[in-house]
Every structure is written in structure tokens, then in C-alpha cells.
Image (cartoon, rainbow, N blue to C red):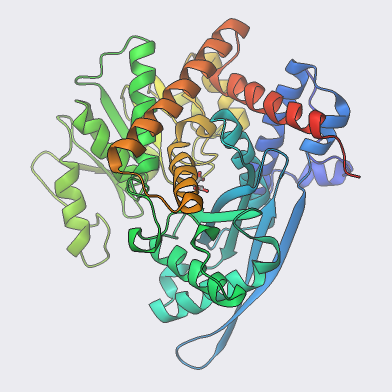
Length: 439
Ligand code: GLU
């Protein structure tokens, strides 16, 4: 099957450059997955054309006064892929590699993720190109408030609801919610999700993405015949996704044989004590695993970690980790994507040909946005749920989506990613067809 060019209106010159940056590679992969699904679904080219483009793209300057009196100006983005299924939804990341292409790709992935889970949202994503570790708490607060002000014209509880993503958290959401509420002159906690509990957050939101990844990893092993008890898991990333995934998989009986963070990879043939590792990071000088030691522990590089023998490999850090450079050496049976876009589309084909089952990000890490949806519902109703209610509903949404994607993919003899994209694209296209083009 021939794929349409990566961007609807560009010429061959841009296509040649398209692989040049991680953001471009990611956008290319995202569009490739859409095009592949569109071709398999025989999608109306008019609908396909609309779904390839983003509804609204905003680039903003974010000037802040640094603690030493100097002024720094960062660049921020908010991209809304579509508002056809409902308000736009997606996180905000602070990272030096944030680019317009990356945010655009991530906004599209959010649309497909929400569609796989049947959440009434279209996708969005935001970000500021900054290394947050170089900023003090006061500088970060000023950055967050100025960025919120700059994207104010296009966000709102029924327009576009931001949430945490890479290097943003509850505290960031508290500042965003406060800035928005102050500027509109009324309490509007539903403007963001992933807020602190005391400000209208939901119980079970902080660990929801990791719990969701663990639920999907367990469901995959169960469905495809790998006993969970004693299954070996390797997890790249030890942040809010990686740690909670490790925690819940260990609780389910898996052996966590490898984890990594920015300081490198740590492996133990009999399994790592992830709770002791988390405790270590709370007081270690760099707040990372650097220097962590225990009898039998071996250290590896982040690259080597991905190649360790294991049953399930969970990339839960950043995008573009599994590529044509390492896909042929991955030893895992299953890859469950905790991060967004960790596998390039070329790697995807190599893994598929080798029989490595990849559970795509738009299903595997959807636990976060699903509990964000519950948080938004609780906010709009001003009626909080308890943890049992949140987790019962999270399991229900995830099991439904997982079964549906697996049944559909098996029936159509496609990979789980192809199946998930086909389901998602057909749902959004159907909504688009029903609404028609305004005016
Ligand atoms: N940033 C998370 C994601 O990529 C959560 C988004 C949200 O809760 O809106 O899925």
C-alpha cells in the first residue's frame, strides 16, 4: 500500500527533510498510522483530508523574569487536532525538545487515544520548549502562569482542557487553574485535570497512567498465554508512569528485572525492589537512581536496557526510543507503550515481522486521560467519587477497549496498533461525517 505524503500540501523537498528531527519523525509516524488506517478502512478522502490537519495551532512567546533579574523568552505551543467528538483534551509538557511538530503529533495521538477509549473528547497537546530543571520554583510558577495566560483565548472547560504530561504535575495544574480562574473572575477548576485533590482533583489520578499500563500489560499476557506470576518486565523510565507501572506489575506477581531513569539502567536477574528504589530517589542528591546499589545489581545504559531478555518491555519515558537501529535486537515478547510514540513506524514494521506484539500507546497509556475524564465529570457535577468508584470505572473502560481492539485486530488480521487506529479513525470519521463541515 502506498502512503499519502506526510503533510497534505508539501512538496518533495519537505518530504526529504521529514526525518530530520525527533518531532518531524514523530509527526511522520503519526500521519503514517492515520494513512494506513484510512487506506484499510477505505476512508472517504474528504474526511481523511480533514483528519490529517489540525483544527487550531497556537505558538506563543513566554517571557519571564528570572530570579537574577534577567529576562528569558521561551516558546510555547497549544495544538488542537479536532473538536469533533467533544472538547479538546491533552497534556502540557515542559521539555527542551518540545517543538511544533512534536506537539502536533501528540495532539493527533490524543484524538485517537480518546476515541479508542470512547471518551467524548478530541485531541490537543501543549508544551513549552524549556529545561525545567534549570528553573527555580518561582521561575517555573511564572512560566506556567504566563503560558496559561498566552493560551487563554483557546482553552476552557468546554473548549480545551489541559493536563499534566512530561515534567508537569499537580503543582503545575494548580497554577494553571488559579491563573485561569483569576483572569476570568470566577472559580473554574474544571479548566484542567490532574489537579491536587484539595483543588478539585480526583482520587486515583496520580497513579492512573501507570495502573492503566499495568492493567493492559496483564491483560495482554493473560490473553496471549504468558503466566503473569514470575513474568519478567523491563521498564524504561521511573517517573510518574514508569514507577507506578512497576509498582502495580510487581504487586500482580511480575518480576521487575530492569528499570531506568536519566541516570541509566539498573537490572537484577531475581527482580528489583522498586519500592526501595523509589525511597532512594526521594533523598538521593540528584533525586534520581544515580548511586543506587544492592547486592546482585548491575548497571546498563538506557540503550542496553531496551535489549534485555524479558517477557514484557515497557518504554515509559520519551518518544523515539525503539527505532530501526534497535528493533531487530529487542528480546521482549510484548512491548506495552507507556510513553507516547516510543516506537517509530519503521521499527513497528520490523517488530511486527519478528512476531513481537506491540500494544500501542493510544491503548496502553490511556488510563491517565480516562481518569482525567472522570475528574472532569466529577468537577462539572461538583460531586467527588471514592477510589473504588474511580478504579472500578477505569478497569471497565480499559478492559472494554482492550477486548475490542484485540477482537477487531484478530478478526481483520492486523497488528494491535493498526486495529486500534482503525477503530479510532472510524469513530472520529463517523462523528465528522454526521456533523458535516461548518457552515
Ligand atoms: N498527558 C497524558 C496523556 O498523554 C494525559 C492527558 C490528559 O489527561 O488529558 O495521555
